[in-house]
Length: 277
Image (cartoon, rainbow, N blue to C red):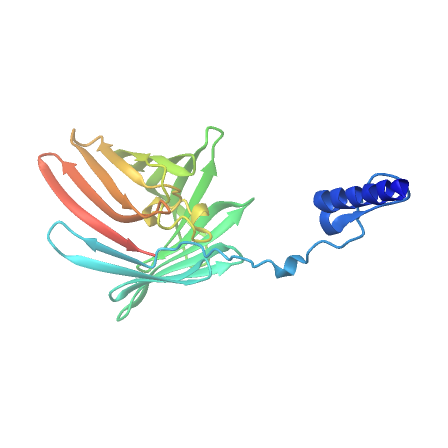
């Protein structure tokens, strides 16, 4: 009888240990130690809720000038593709081809389109822009250099993209870390140099699809972070214009307010921009 009690107690101990260590996944095979039962299906993953994180896109910009004038830009999107941005009667419309921006048109509600830029790419980079500006046609070509800079030149054209003589306008962009850090501009004998310093926060338009490939500085693209200082000098006079930008940020590192103080000679002006997402 004692032997039977000892045997029964041993079975209970083994069963309890198996249950404690392995729960429902524990089985006993022959006289070996308990092992994990790999034939039991894991929980279905479709029961796990999927959290969709919407991209952060700027929806409105309100700019207050030094003289007190206020302008508001409202931006519309289709997912992360920008459809348009509007400032009063002026609207900029965007057209995509796949995931790249193919065309940008600037228009006035009363006078229609006055600037059209068509973008052409090669090997994933901007190759040239075909533009119509107030009835005149131009081609702006880009050359990518081994030092990371990009040279551009603006050429007169006709409506069929036939190149004519070069305009006096050319320049060079230099990029670092996804940001434009220098812009050298030439127009005849005039030369200017603009340098930029950035923070490590998110630019309000960084999530707009296709913006990173557009290196046309006049459009204000091709920047990942926010400029905190811009300095411009030229070869005509000795004056240097300096703009210092300070920001207020939200919890995600996107600016909600920008204050820019411009120092040009003895004149100082202050302007602000607020951002809504």
